[in-house]
Image 1 (tube, rainbow over the protein chains, first blue to last red):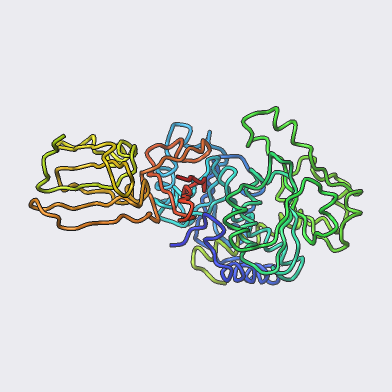
Image 2: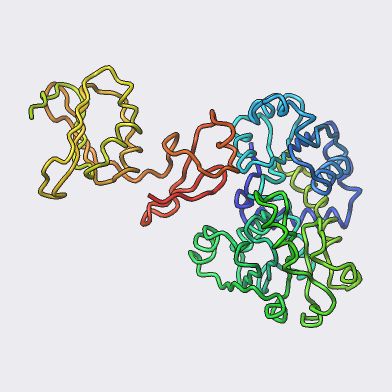
Length: 305
Length: 139
């Protein structure tokens, strides 16, 4: 039985296969509409989410399967003090695959050890978010035709931004990628990622506080939101939340074929005027999330069209 | 100072001076009924000062703990009053229930009954990371 807890649970070959299936789903959606008939996806969301939960549910429904679950801890037995492990053991009897979001880091790892069905990490605190990474990889692949040979800038909250951590880990396994990390001092990428993922593999990277300086060299710009829920101290959040705002003026410095990605939701780090720029790809990216989750659910259930 | 010789048990030797109490706690030796001797600051030609622990029973010894605390420790296994085996513990690839993660956002910080798991990421620096949340620890 396979789980997806960390993006590195999948080999690059498996990721390439998922992307190929996703491309086929886009080309021939009708071929997939009954693949999961009779199967149930449980969405266990101990923390609120719109896109991730709905895209998981939409993915399963588009595959002809059914969904059940909860969308906040208050409406689950967690509110009564039940452990993650107990919840998952029980739900294993009710569903064929589980997608789980939890505010505590490592909760899906704890879950997969006792689950009787595949567990998908749908985000664990500020730690990992592998299906967002698959979404990002599919989007980059669709934009650039390959996952090799480009310069990607990550901008904003690189400390708590789990989507950033997972995407850096995933891209580190491809070739010819340069990383540019744009953040204030307080929100820099964690040292363990720099040392164990980038420096250990001699991958080129730079760290800067200036989005304007980094912009001209970028092929992909990955914007992130400064997440209020990750701060223990509200004063720090208020001080840092508007550090980077991407607007049309800054985009004048960018390449004409730049792809702007954002895991969403955005607050004000990308102005609305940017939405009309053809380089803004974040809404397509959100759509790609449903497609790649369809491919992932099929893989974990061992199903093919 | 006289410490009776052991018939069946272990001698943990070449413990870095001062580290014996940490090992005593991590191995759970306080829960044993048998005799346990802790010798602190013994003279050593190799270390100048060292600690020694003698355990007068062949308990299930967690060598991972010893390898983690100090891979230079030697373990002599005594059977029927004779040296049966000498073990040199290695730095373990995985530590279970030895460390607790200090990251307040880690699930093991709120669900205390979960077994702690740490994986060796850098043998040179003795760096481990929490298998749940990836928080790193250096010894």
